[in-house]
Length: 404
Ligand SMILES: C[S@@+](CC[C@H](N)C(=O)[O-])C[C@H]1O[C@@H](n2cnc3c(N)ncnc32)[C@H](O)[C@@H]1O
Image (cartoon, rainbow, N blue to C red; front, side, top):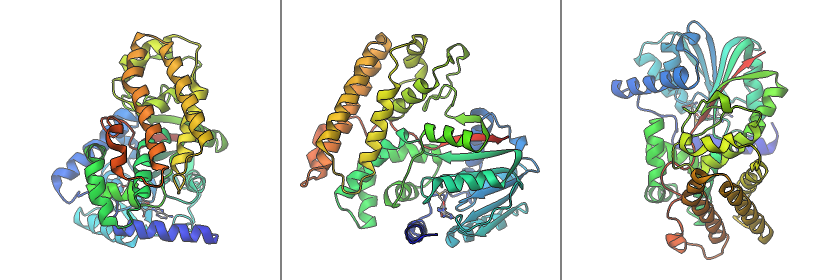
């Protein structure tokens, strides 16, 4: 590990020691049952991975946190090894193991970067919510691939770049307000980003503090793009088995849309449009996109891709600066997308007027405001009416690869 990496790891460990985001109160039988049902639903319904596929299988979990996921998988019959560098989390994982008298789970304290995985040994290797925080995302992914047997599975839980933009905006606001005291970050976030946090609690069952710590206190929060994921699929000779939200028609909020007829050769277009949808979701996908995909041509993926990449670049910048040239480009992409959406159909027009135009203008407005020296949250005033509401943004995306 080089110096920069060591420094990075120290900071991440320090942040996670303050409050482990994975801490779900599964000591309570009621919460445990709900957590179990959520995971059963995730694997069986959303990922088409029946839980019997875990039975008697060797599972490696890199970045296991407090071990809840492994406890669930072991109840599906798996033999799990969870690895995490936070000793506080590992201690709690061992306590849970004892409480539920589970034999087929072990936990080990180790840094993933130093951990020598047993090669081609595990039937299934998983990592949920870790890749956003590691120094080298590809190294983590490579370890998952190396540890998995041929015909085995790799399951990754990550955040997609577009689905992260709303949270990056929250981070940029906190950074700009120079709130360095964690307690203040918590109370500020609870007030301002209330709906977003409530939604995360509802779907992820994590605590309010855990969520805030994960996305606002931690130094790094990096998303992965579908382009990158598909690049890894090719490079490491894998095959995407399933994804939630769906990969073939990659809707983010409403994965129920499965019309085979429309799965023509327009993957890039679909990925890009769904990236936009991750930022601006307000309505059922079925309603919005059916007509759009029926009509080929007038594709807008280049503009959407550029929009997402530039937004991410600006938001990941520590000093929140926004160059005039960049603002010009953002406005240009935004207008191009808008025009092309409008050219689609009545349904899309509705989506465009109600969601995309208003919300993308809000994003651009926030960027302009936070790039100013004298920024205070009040200066945003009623410029943020819609963005921090509803279903905008996206939680964890899960993807399963099969090793060829
Ligand atoms: C958001 S939590 C997710 C925990 C768990 N996988 C879950 O889904 O509940 C991220 C975890 O990654 C761990 N982590 C981050 N970087 C790590 C590293 N380099 N080595 C080991 N663990 C790491 C943290 O300690 C933390 O427990």
